[in-house]
Image 1 (cartoon, rainbow, N blue to C red):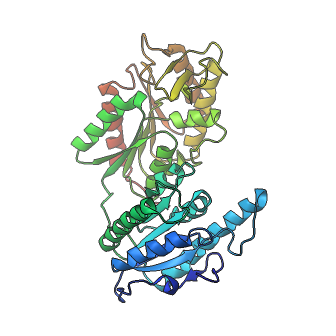
Image 2 (cartoon, helix red, strand yellow):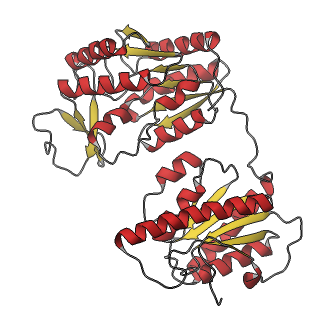
Length: 414
C-alpha cells in the first residue's frame, strides 16, 4: 500500500478490499493496526473479515508513520500520542456509525499503543487483541475482558502459522459481531451479583461464602486478589455491577507496601463504597516474593514458606502489621458507606494457624488493635475467635452483608 496515512486517521478500507461482499447492513469492525510494520497482516485480516460479510474500518496507529525513528523518552511520548489518537479516531468512527467489535493487531510496541485504547471504560462492545504478547497483558485484559489471541509466530510477515491464526481470529470476530448488539455486547443481568475476593490462602473461606451467597439466591463473582483481580473487582463495583461485596482477601494492600510497581489500582478499596460491603484481613499478614529468590534475602529471620515454585510468602514484622492496619483504616475512612470489618483472631491465612508456617497470634492482635484505634469510629469492627477459613467465619460475613444490604441498598454508580 502506498502513502501510509498519518497516525490515528481512519482509513477507508478501499486499499484492502478483496471480496466486496459487504452490504450496508454488514456489522462494522474497527481494526486498529500499526500499518508501518503490519500492513501485510492487516490486509490479510481485513480480507478474512470481508469474506465473512463484515465491514472493517482500519485505523492506523503506527508509531513511525513516516519512517522516522524514535527512542528513549521521545518514543514514550510518541506512543502516548499514538494511543490518544487511536482513542480519538475510535470516538469519531463511533459517532459516524455503530461499531460491533473492535480488534487490534500489533507486536510489542503496537500492543502497548493499542491495549490502553481498548481498555477505555467507555467502550462496551467486544474487543479482541491479536498480539505477540511481548509484555504482560493482564493489566488491561483483567479489567475490561479484552479477548487475547496470541499470534504464536511473530507478526513479521505472512506465513502458514500467521495466516492460520488470523483466519481463526476472523471467525471469532465474526461470531462476536453477529452476537453483539450495535455499540455493545449482549446485556447480562448483574443486579444480583455479590463480589468476593480470594487467594489460595483464603480459598476455603471464600468458597464457603460464595456457596452461602448462591444459596440465598444471589450470584457470586469471585476475583483472584493478585493485583489484576482486585482491579477487576473494583472496576465491576465502579460500574454498578455489584449489589454487595465481601472483600475476603486484602492481601493486595500489603503488597502495595512492598512492591513499588504494584499493579493494584488506587481505588482498590474505595470503588466498592457504592454498595454494602464486608472486609476480612485475608492474607494481610505476609508479603509475596519471587520463589526463586533465596529464602532469607531481604527478610533475615522472618518466617516464611513456599506457596508454590513461583511464590514465597514471608511473614510481616510487628511494625509492618501496624503499617498495613493503618493503610486499611485510611482506605476505609476515605470511602464512607455501609462498611463492616470482621477480624478472625484464629488466623488470617491458611498457614496462620496453630502449627502453621507463619502462625502469629501477637501479629493478629497488633493488627486488630491498630485498626480499631485508627478507625475513629468510621466503620464497625467485629472480632471472632475463629479462623478466616472456618465455615462459621464465612457465615458471619454473609449474614452481616445480608443485614447491611437490607438496611443500606446499593447506591447508584459514579
